[in-house]
Image (cartoon, rainbow, N blue to C red; front, side, top):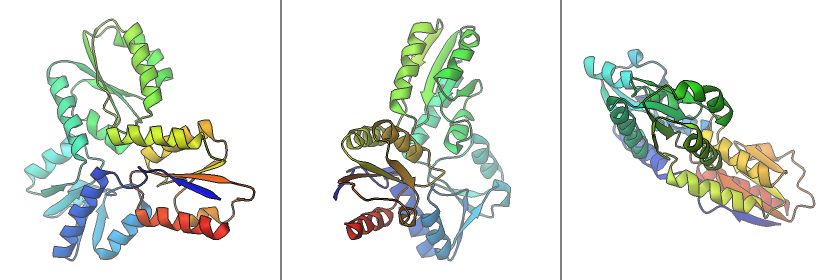
Length: 280
């Protein structure tokens, strides 16, 4: 069995930075609070909890210091912390912080901000909170139902969730350019690392018999990888840990592709590879 591992599989720079920051903090103190899960990986979160990380869901439960997760938070969290003398250790991805700044700047310039992404995702909720006027639109189908309303606006700026499907964004961009009358600015704010990872997933999945996507169930970028792989390889599975492969029929498979989301540890990837080699 030939195993093809994506070169971009595993932690992205933003996640690595967040983990390094939290690890250094836990080396200095016995415990520290984090507002929501630091990243979308239950196994990594469990290990951090063993070292003293405590997850809280409301900023009002914070004491003197709290970590901001890699996916960012809403603007009012920063405002509350400042008013109540709560120190924030901001582990928001640096690229996402720049998107927050851009969203706020565009809003101040009276652009109606359209954010393309998942309404329920914490990153998306955080970004849109920096806009005084705007809305979240999830896909092309929803956009088509809103086009008449959007054409009543004078200026529109479009941003995207950093882990959005690139191909779907390009379809949306094309539709907007053809159908929107207002002054229009479109920003492809999909993370470069996400774009490269999606492209590599596409290429690998076209050339294997079986495709394994490793990542957390709540991970948006992992879900995008799974969607892309499924388009090219019908025998694609998404797993969070190696045990989910134990009951899979891997007979008569000559070539397996592996890709992992941005919150997936090297340990999880290595466990999958080791298991596949044992099955040969």
